[in-house]
Length: 402
Image (cartoon, rainbow, N blue to C red):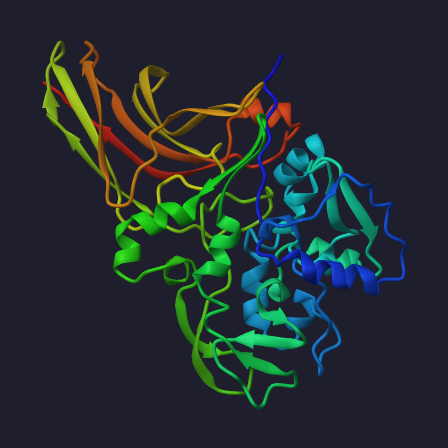
């Protein structure tokens, strides 16, 4: 029997008092609350409370924002945030166990969720007490993590500065838009059941690493500064990109994805000119030079594969592969078996030795690929056309035989 895997994401959300007040204002009747119902107390257990449309706007959809902020909207459409709800991997994982808390990261606004959760029967996240959400917006749900997820609160548009000429009410609040907003979702270590855990530690990795000490955060790398017009015709000003570059592995086969270089590669070859029978030594140095967190990070299924190969014009003669990533057992109890992710600043050397064959022409190949998940788990989740990997480094050396 194949292992069953559960991964939960956590949300940037609010306390139970706020969500209860929103439930009471709805017209739908709440499910009967049993005596053993436990109130929600943890921040990730609830969605961000219902957000009303700020005065001057007609919608809080990303599409609506894009009518003025056209360039930012086009960037957001390239991001994994835009695909957070429609991502085939997420949908496959969520449907396995139908645990509502997954939605609190992938559709963080209460407006995007069909039900409002007001408590847990016996404290069990698999048996939430729900109320129908009269303000549920299906179109908004499909946008996943949209503009409003970060920028709309209490009838105002939150930005780094207040813009008096904007048609909507704007509020300057850099603290709200700090890295903590990112970490609320991108750092989760929580065991709900023995076989149901959150294990996303990017925030902790950053806090322990040199980037934190240097004053660099998530925004420094994943939202680079650019000078441009926020709205056409209103002059250029400094702002930030909104495609949130990351792994670069697209969610869909026809999607353009934006990657961010975290690693640097340097190869070494012991001899360029060799004789049959010689032992040739090949090295690849992999440095986590640019990322402020481990690489890979986030979803523990992610890994990097380093492959050496010796090939002639007809076939691969020999190959050797190395894996960078975590190994987990998910069932019957989730447990990390191993972890060799690269820490910030770490350099790791991979060696490949090979006795040179008695042939006149062959090529040494070095290839590094980045993977979202392995093929076995993809097939188990019926993800048949899902992009699983991209190539991030490749070299070929034609060696001279004396």
